[in-house]
Length: 456
Image (spheres, rainbow, N blue to C red):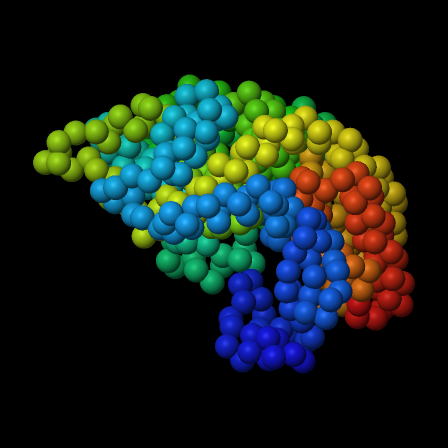
């Protein structure tokens, strides 16, 4: 154990981590990054197969972003947006609005995805009070949804393993069915079209009776990422936009995981030509360089907060690092790369390589399902792939595959029984092919152990 691992295990409490297991197991100490690879303190290299938890877009040590941050730090590292303006935050806001779905035009900065959602919830709640409709205070969310870890964001989340401990802290919401193929099987509906009609009728029926008390619906568009890359049926997002608009309910779209190219377009909303009332961004907004969140609203919502100080319409919410100049400078540089390198336009061949490998992985012994959209994928494992009978958690099936992958120079991560693959958009076709070939070798190794009943 080197010095840094020793200090980590003595002092640090890691997120979403059982620390007993952590301290008893050898861990990697990452020292540096270059392109789509990470390097540990022993000099070993690894592909960054989950984009450093889905945030890295253009690779590590990208020269253009490095220079932008260095140039900004020579001017000032931070200046508050409370009563002051800074140039990078103003420039990034203008650039973000330029690429937003139509109608979204006001940017509220925060620190990360959770705080972006938290701001959206409070904005929606307060908006209806300013409209003289304080009774519109309830939120609709989806089963198996995840929107972050602050109390408001957890309240509109529905992943039991993450959230059950905090139920007594949360405000109540109305839960709609999870729009995924796995849940369609539970309904007995045979086709995707029948399932889509069922989902939209469920929402329509609820809002016919309850629109008067409903402030907003909160959704992850196209894919519920933290639930295990659950893909929604085509037309679902478009359908709920039409229904919420017709019933006078705000639509909050959480693009923290899906934004900035992850689903094949700049934003998932574009795929179904949807303009929400509020959009939440983070993760890829700075290409993985610095923490930043953004909650972007329509002009109508923004205007509802305008008035005299004595009207008490101010949005009393903020963060010390709101609009941090270093983070915003990184965000501007990232958008420059998107434009100059035609990042979105160059994704289809890369997406095709992922799809080709997933066809092979889908036929492996313990692969129960593969789910793929754009540059993200989830591989679900099960002891009985046909009946979807899970492995005994003690066997560490998906986690074991991820650990084994490190021996082949690939870092990836599991969510329960699902292995997540989400490489940087900058990855070449050859690099993606190499990453997934290494994952397949790790799966072969792990599956042999699992077939014998051994812990991976």
